[in-house]
Amino acid sequence: MQTERGVTLISATIYIIVMLIIVTIITVLTSYFYKNVDIHSATQNLNQQYTKFNSYFTEEVNKKGNKILDIQSPIKLEDEEGADMQNNVGKQNYIIFSSGNQYTYIPKNKGIYMNKVKIAQNITGCIFTTNKEENGKTTIMVIMQGENFERKTSYTLVD
Image 1: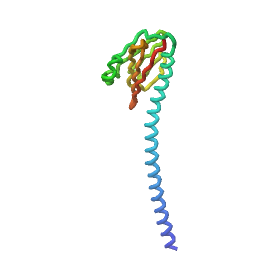
Image 2 (image 1 turned 60 degrees about the vertical axis):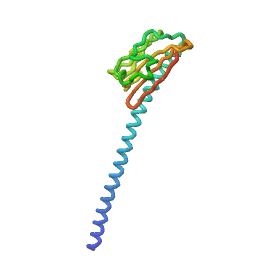
Image 3 (image 1 turned 180 degrees about the vertical axis):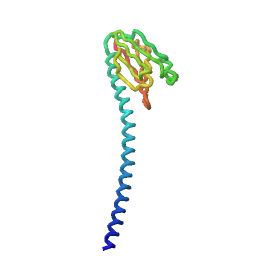
Image 4 (image 1 turned 90 degrees about the horizontal axis):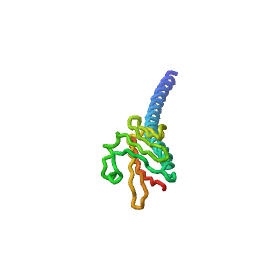
């Protein structure tokens, strides 16, 4: 009888040790999984913010007869290739259209506003620049930055 108790006690001890090892492995794998999911969701959120801004801005530039009334930008489109984006990131920029809509980047809030409505958030930098093409068309370059995120998009105003 005594040998059966000893075998049972040794079996129980081995079982507990094996279960602790398995639980530890599952915990480590789960923490890596959730860490990667958080990184992916942050990038996905910036893509969603860019898409939302892009839909509003595309609708604006495709309005017939819409013109640029005023623009505040730290660089010109011709200088864009050689411009130091880092020196321009923390500055407020805006563009006003003849339709009455104003798109403003406010670095303090890390947001882009259409009039007084926030249409994009968690944006660390946004620059609006314009250029007149040889064919007479006006192009607008929007450079948008977030954490590990940068998009340069060129829009052409519809006449």
